[in-house]
Image (cartoon, rainbow, N blue to C red; front, top):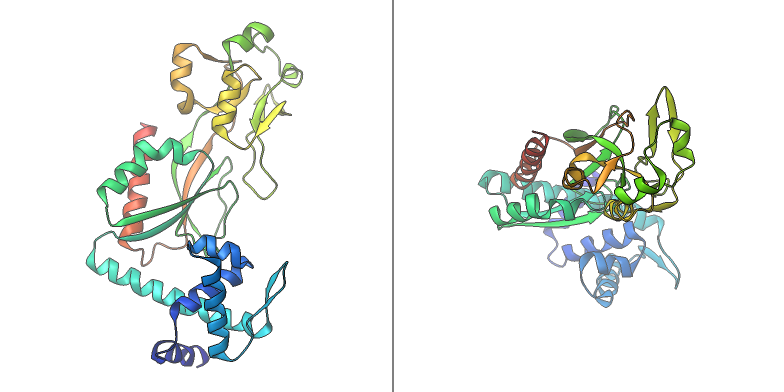
Length: 313
């Protein structure tokens, strides 16, 4: 079998540097020596040197480089498949050994929506890292749906105001946010409370701005059998910035009730009409499979689930 032969060569040749293969897969997927160096936290010259050593050992060109682009050759594209299979097997082996020891340890690469880390830092992340000193977290904040396998993420946190359809990934709901349309006291003094749906289109609003490949916007209100899609006066891809803009009186907006419970209690923010209905949004943990999940991931998932249970009660 071709792959079996590849493994034999991979593990038996003394001059076969696994770092070369790891670096090659990063360059191939990112199509950039510079981005690969940044991802691996090494010098660009090291990346270039390792790729040259790999090509010299194999006696074949794997990448075509120009000043503007990096592309795989036909041989490089085929070789990449074998490299990714081998590296995935090594990772599974590491996870297997970690599971046997039952001690959560190693790196966890996580994708989360913007602003979530700031919210989670004191309640989830800091206590988790204190409890498990042998675990390292790498968290990438983005509102797009990352490819967990291709982009090498162990877990993704995703928000959605729609029910998740059948998927090859495991989706585990940990939190559901009640959303409310709110404005500052200053804003209410200028525009008043909203009484009819048509008024929503004539007063300024603030909300999330995200590109087409990211999660759906929270900008739809259902009221008196009408669906109103807001056109924001200010749109920004940061929920904390949206909250600050609403508090500053730039417009009304939609926020999680749990996110602003102190402001609501103090009367700093007010609901513009309590009859307005907005679809709740849910937070999900997403990962490829429950089978063979290493101790480090089980521990992190458990920490997130406990957080969800605590804030929902």
